[in-house]
Image (cartoon, rainbow, N blue to C red):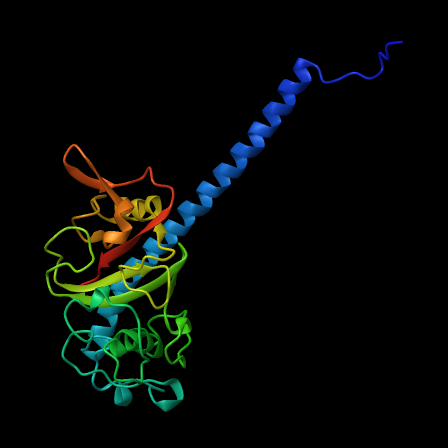
Length: 251
């Protein structure tokens, strides 16, 4: 005998359920987009604030943070207790094209990246920036984090490129967005999604990976970062994997 009490869903009920599921999925995706946009906006704000911090430091001390050769006599608590030392005063963070170099050594070592560590320490001890451990001696706690999931690094370019997309890198101090505390701009591990770097470029520069004051950074192993369309190099937004670093000209 047929059991008429054991009924399934009607088409209307199924349509309602599918609609609710679609709304939930749409809400999640919209929430993820809002979070991503907030991370990008915050990272951009930090990058621009660093430009101001460098200028403030120069105005106050007549020197570049990290390179200042009288930090131990001019900055309060720049001593052994905070692992703070002087730079060499040559107006560079170690040497030209140091922007692409990973972080090695410590602020108190003779490593080629010593002044890149000191850059953050000098700024922090001057009270111009916050967010780092002033007593750190060569770990990620001594670097400023960015909100898209990594760290900021600094270094000079001498007008040529050793990891940025495009030729004729603007001379001066560049900020590198790297996913790892010890990595340079050619890091092949855990680097940022193309769409995040592309969104930052669009917000503050010309939106192109190989020109202007914001560029994509890659080496041959990060080839998916950019692609060619109608003979022009563009960000490869179709790539859903993480394959870019970012470079921002500071001064």
